[in-house]
Structures are given as C-alpha cells and as structure tokens.
Amino acid sequence: MKSDLVKRISLRRVLLMIGSFIIGVLTDISFSYFMDGIPVLYYDNLKHTDIISVQITQGDETVLLTDATDIEKAARFVCTLRYRFGKAKDSEAEVMYVFSFEDGTKMEIGANSTTVFKNGKQYRGDSDSCEFFITCTKGMFFHGRTARSGP
Image 1: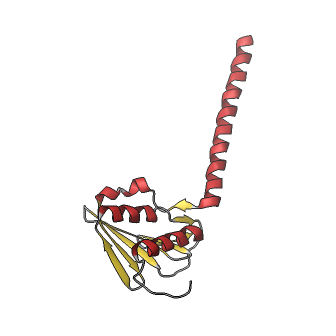
Image 2 (image 1 turned 90 degrees about the vertical axis):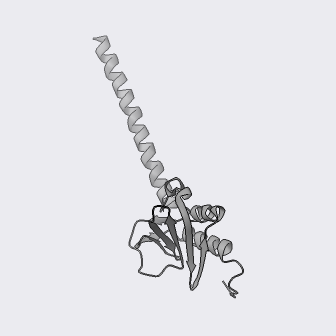
C-alpha cells in the first residue's frame, strides 16, 4: 500500500518537472522570437569553407570576394539577418549576396530595410537586423566607393 503511494507521488513529481521544463523551453523560444526574430541562416550551416566566392551587389555597384577572410566576414554578416512571421512587401533588395560553392551551387541572400530575400523568396525582415546588415555591408565592402551625402 505504502509503495503504491510513493510511486504515485514520484510519478507526479517527474511529470511536474517535465511539464515545467517544457513550459520553460516554450517560454524561452517565444521570448527569443519576440525580441530577436528568427535567423535566416545559422553560421554553422553555411559551411564557409566550401564557398569559393561571394558577389555583393549594392545598387549598381558589385564587389567580388575571393579572399578567405573577406568570405568569412560576408558569411558572418549574412547570419545577422533575422525575419519574423508575416507577409513581406514586394520590393527590391538594397544589398544582395550571391555565394558560389565548390559544388557549383549558388545561394542568394539580401535585404532592404523591411524585407529579407533568400533564394528568390521574401520574408518580413526584422528592421534592426536588416539595417545592421546593410550598414555593415556598406561600411566593410563599399566604404569609400560611393560619395553620398545625407543619411
């Protein structure tokens, strides 16, 4: 009799701990989404060692990166892009990266201030990450190339 009671109490404790853990994980994921959005790409998934070149286009200017250090910087910038659920506005990318891989495949990722572009699809971008991505790209790869006045 006593052992049945102990088993029920132990089972309740285990189920309560598992339930608390699941609720905590779901709360953390929800909080992370509302604060940061969802990453378009994870750095570990990009396998930057397989990239042979990156072509970056901003407006009518294009830069081709083949140096391993520059390719790694470009890969890290792309991984800062985040998107949110919802419909993206049809628009054009302000900055577009085209990664060329050793196996001959290509991956296109770009952004403007409100939209993230990935392989022909558009996502509603997180405005902070989009602006950060555009600013870093302009500063790192197009610095001094274009004389623009104003913001």
